[in-house]
Length: 355
Image (cartoon, rainbow, N blue to C red; front, side):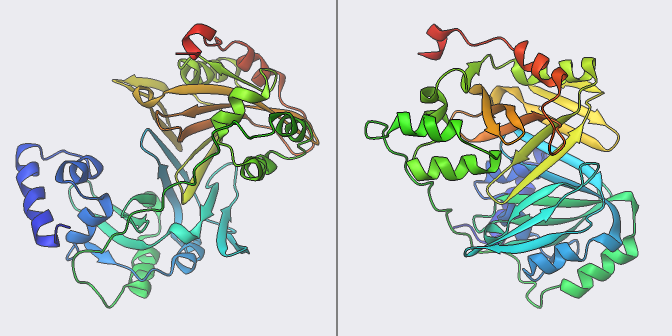
């Protein structure tokens, strides 16, 4: 494991050749996590905070309008708003967190993975942020001040939670591997199909998969095309373009193992930049790297309010990159416009799907 001084030396060598390298790419080039890279720089512009994650999140509302950034390898969700009415509760051994505001900050938090937190001042970009990482040093969530933020409240919060330990560097641990799924030969697929048909809430879907010890895509391939089918990987772009055309509000879920960021909006300013397809609206940015998309699935899940349809996009390892839903109010059916968008998506050729 590289120590902080070694990391700094490598960082300076790379930045001398390419000073605009993003921190995430810089860390990858050095061979460390983004959290290790940041922790190596603890000092004048980077402050280690005590890992009192819930308390920090509960005290963000006085800071005013902030930008919440949640990402995974191939997608970044950036939403501006106020961290208000956060709720934290125990779910077995886990602490879960919620911020629910469809017009602003909308998050689902799995706090067991939140390990390190830093306050970061970037003198070059001129921004201030709070950055949270898991035990492997992987970024879970970042919170940036905006022009409308209360900077005095921000500095007061940083002072309040500053750790006594400002030694550069962090120790990291590998994340536990995902549990293996059954190979499918001993799964009662007929029973799984029956339970799928009887779903009353989309949130029950995960527990159903755990019960049968199968993966999402395993289930998608076996349940039947009336409930799940593969579509062309251009579908994410089409969903955004058609939602703009039809003025259909979308719910986009982007997450990692510790945080899911949800944005509800009608996309407006759509911009292609290299392999990235982007929403660049005033309070909402989405950045989707289409090169990372391996498969795209339309899924239909029964609920007490009728069928709920989604587009689920995964990478080559089966990790979810982004999930799209049409905005739907509790107690109401899906919007007609959303179903029209889904119906317009090109199904993947079955011969291609078998490859």
